[in-house]
Image 1 (spheres, rainbow, N blue to C red):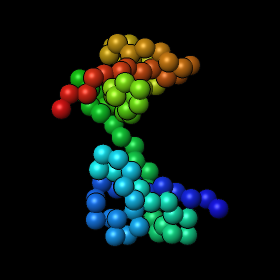
Image 2: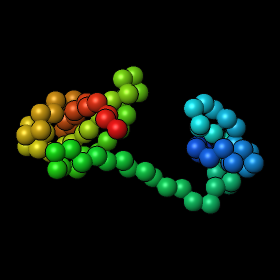
Image 3: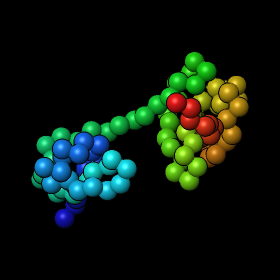
Image 4: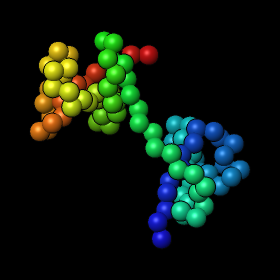
Length: 94
C-alpha cells in the first residue's frame, strides 16, 4: 500500500492524528485513499534580479540555486554540476 507523509507546523493538527516530530513539525502517514488533493511545490529564489529553482543543502543548511541556462550560469558565477545543470550554493540570511 502506498503511503504519503503529511507535514504541518500547526500543533492543533495533533487533534487530526498528526504526531510531534521535532522543532514544531508534526507528521501523519496516510494512504492514497486518505488524500483528496496533491500539490507539487516548486520553490524558487530571486538572486541578483534573476529567478532560479532553489532547494536546501541538508548537510550545510545553505540554499542551492540551479539553472540549465549556460549563459546566465556563467554570468552569475555558477559551477557546472551535471551535463546541463549549473548550481550555486549561498548562505541564507534572514
